[in-house]
Amino acid sequence: MNLAPGAWSEARELIARRLGLHFPEGRQADLERGLARAFDESALREPAQYLSWLASAPEGDPGLRRLVAGLTVGETYFFRDAASFDALRDDVLPELIERRRSQGSRRLRVWSAACATGEEAYSLAILLDRLLPDRGDWKVTILATDIHVGALDVARRGLYREWSFRQTPADIRARYFRAHGSDAFEIDPAIRSAVAFAPLNLAAEIYPDLVTNTTAVDLILCRNVLIYFTREAQQLVAARLGRALTSDGWLLVSAVEASASLFAPLLPVNVAGVTFYRRPSGREPGTKPTDQPTRDRSDALPPATATAVMPPVPPAAVAVAQAVSPLEEARALADEGQLDEALRLCRAALAHDRLDLDAHLLLAAVCQETGEIPAALDALRAAVYLAPESALAHFLLGALLLRCEQRRRGALSMQTAVRLLALVPPDEPILGAGGVSAGRLLEAARQHLEGAA
Ligand SMILES: C[S@@+](CC[C@H](N)C(=O)[O-])C[C@H]1O[C@@H](n2cnc3c(N)ncnc32)[C@H](O)[C@@H]1O
Image (cartoon, rainbow, N blue to C red):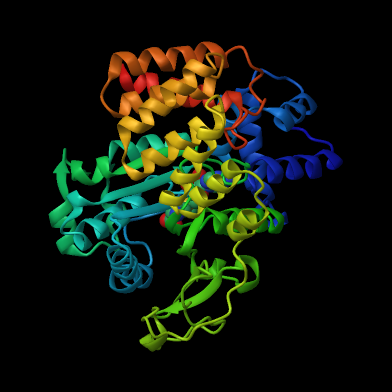
């Protein structure tokens, strides 16, 4: 691809803005190779045309996917970084589970952001399977996202070769995998179906949001991806991931990505020599923050008596303080994971105005989270009745019906969403969908329909 010298900086800037990726001088050859391949496969003949296409290509555009495939690094394996998985198994997850039990809640949400071919998300699912003997009583969400849809396809298949097991303990391998053909291993179907894979560009403003199921997360793993990002993209992602956490939720990045200043106001916490970041709750005693990870396990996790710190005000608490309507307050509380209170306020908003579409949609999202599926369906049917032109309402109703195995009705709603979305310019944000564009929602609707066929 022949670009004038000035156009290279434009290309770098566009790739940083659209994908978050940073290509310093040392990686110029990777950038040139990836761009040239994507350009050759496009219908465009002029590099300048390609760059102006790149500036506005909708999320999910196949051309953008080809570029992503050529520019990203997908190296991963099961239980990558044993120390981190030991800390998760021995400290972080047991603490989260105990905390939920003591709160009388059986709800846990974890997210592998930039999961590549799925090994990290499945490793988490295996840990949770081992730590929750009463798993059937819990509502566990394991979300796994990546920008690379080809990698997600591999992840969904759940077939892996020897190289993915280079750090997998033998007992886990024997228990959760079985041989498939001469050189592959298949993950246990129960573990595979426990993980929900979805495309998500960390550089796009589509999270945290109920639509992308990225709110009130208890534990986020976002490892070995920020290292490829520009400083600006790292800052935006760090802030959004912080907001996606529930109060007292945990974030884990890789050791080389750890930075107290980048992840503030999350607090760095040393857990058995591994630095985690924790969103302070503001209501409960916090944990001992440290900028100096040590191997000492004594301050590993927040025993009830851990040193209390004055936590910074969490962003969602600010949102609650500034909220003017019950609905805005309900949304902020839902983002925080305070679902009972969010439900109460949604219902109050609806008592005030039965025709409030946003209130029905939020009520439906919160009811889904609390497991009140019939109430969620009622709220979505009301939304569709009130706003038959709302593609989002049809989409959400279709997705829930399909989840409930109501395939015919689900497919009908999803087809309506597809018809409505096809009328909207792909890059136009869908109202109430937290920044998700029409093109992206259309792509998701089509994926649902394919899955239902
Ligand atoms: C090296 S892998 C990391 C996999 C896993 N987290 C681990 O630590 O083993 C990096 C992943 O980041 C993904 N990625 C790169 N840019 C991204 C973006 N803007 N949004 C989401 N994922 C992205 C790539 O597609 C790739 O799968």
